[in-house]
Length: 159
Figure 1 (cartoon, rainbow, N blue to C red):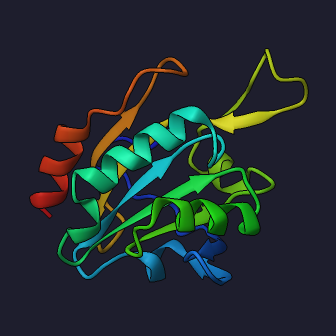
Figure 2 (figure 1 turned 90 degrees about the vertical axis):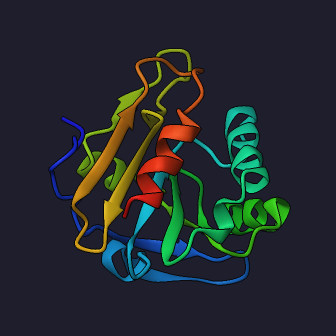
């Protein structure tokens, strides 16, 4: 079951990409002083992820003060870094969840019936404080609906 408000996100560790390099990093080390916004999506260069993340860039999420914005997707670190360079927002970083272990630890991994032998996380957003306590949680119940951007922004501002 995915985390809800009041839960603590697991302190998973995976390759964290910054657009140029990647290194194994725990979630707790990737968060900002006040916490972070964790966005889970299937694949970095999917049309939906491209649309969402460009919206986040235009909305100024890179300027959240002491609140990190990190993505989690099933792509490897080279694809994640290419995606981050394409976004051209140096404040964003992505965890490479190649084997789906991060998504599984969050209770989000789902088989994609129309994609043979492929599992991806349900699209979701978590706003967590510096102790990884969930202050806001959203898990989509379909594969195409947009994230509630303003609700996420309000939750990040209240950290």
